[in-house]
Image (tube, rainbow, N blue to C red; front, top):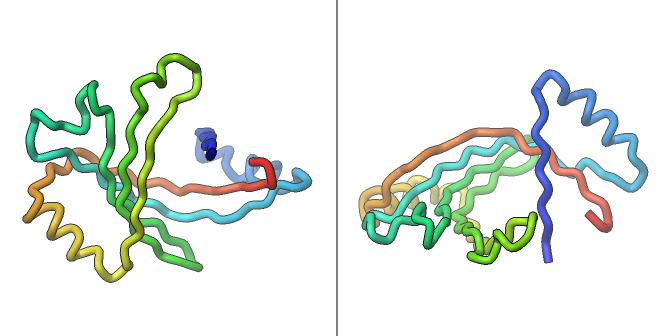
Length: 133
């Protein structure tokens, strides 16, 4: 089982927080990368991923830094009984695609499947790991 914990901090505090985390024994800074995520909805409104019944997100994500560039398609949705606890339970499925196939993928999403672009966002993600976390 995988657990993901996210923390959001003001940009001006970032360097100070990273320096503190680097000093923690057994905690390793794995990577920092730029991510751009675009989210799409089902072309049929009756089957919208954003409905209460589905509560899902279909995403195309680009992740890159000086060492690698990755692109993937992902599906993520909350499991219906997630409200029973304070921790969201989610289903997530990811498929990696070749970096140079991105334009073809976007052609299929937009022109063949006619999926509606809903939103996109950009962020930098810094990952720290331990044997337990």
